[in-house]
Length: 369
Ligand SMILES: [Zn+2]
Ligand SMILES: [Zn+2]
Image (tube, rainbow, N blue to C red; front, side, top):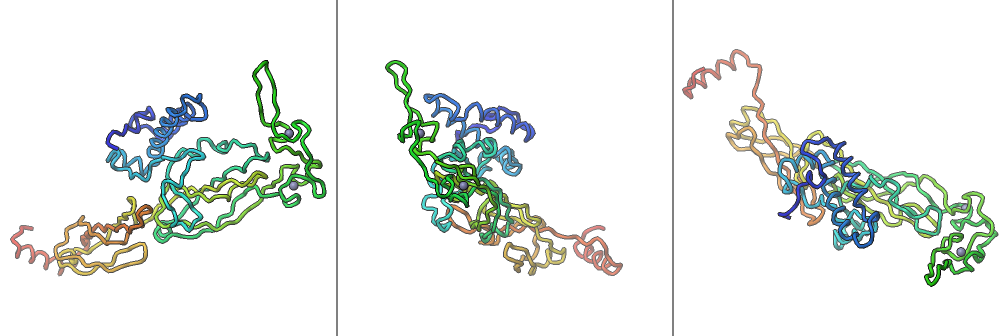
């Protein structure tokens, strides 16, 4: 970790560059180094480079993370923000090992930007062919309270499902599939050039070996139609902005199978709490008298108000720690703390009697007023 390169350097931009410029530079580099765009022998190298720029982008494109990075460098960025596995098809489940905490639905959770740049083109499979359906991506906003307890949300989105008329076969009911005449049912066709013989997927049946006799009139043979789908998603406690949850087999349908659904988490800003990993911070107002004499104050937590004792002579800016009142750490499942920063409120309006008392007090302490 100590040999990490500077994120600005990686993206070839100067410190203080606008997020727009950072985005532009990232896009350019990502296109250039995308592993799908380089020859086989350079793939390994390109993947490394691509990971590097994606990680840099994930941090610098997020105002909060960028701020932390600017202040503290790599140490300011929790390792959870690395984008180890943003590649399509990578085995995300490795990040969270057993991953059983998500009730078996969510296999993984990772964080990162970079997803948007390839847009809908991420899935290059032919829609409506015999390949697997595309992955679907949705952004979900949750409150900090939701993050604290975990939550369930019902979401509605537009996705491809099996055609109701042909049940996904693409064939008009009553008609069936027949052997493909182009490839004779083999699914592949050969073309020869001298001694070299190429085999390629049959263009007529997309490798299925069979073709539809009479195409379904409802879906034009695609086997699928788009509709609104409502599903309930479980969001585990401890997620952060940039977390991505994957729900297997909840993406778009295609006769070859269903893609996955990726939920990109966005945590709304909270009016009272700042978040740093699993620690939350808030400010508590304390009267001047209480700060001098000590006593009990009420402080907000994510699960409601609690009483907290402050000692005599509590200075402004003192930070108290409420153990276990922070957020759950997704990896070790430990509960974080809440930090309460004391703000002393000095009275601005005094009655003449109060003023006299304070003047007397000043005399008592030998202070000239
Ligand atoms: Zn149909
Ligand atoms: Zn064929």
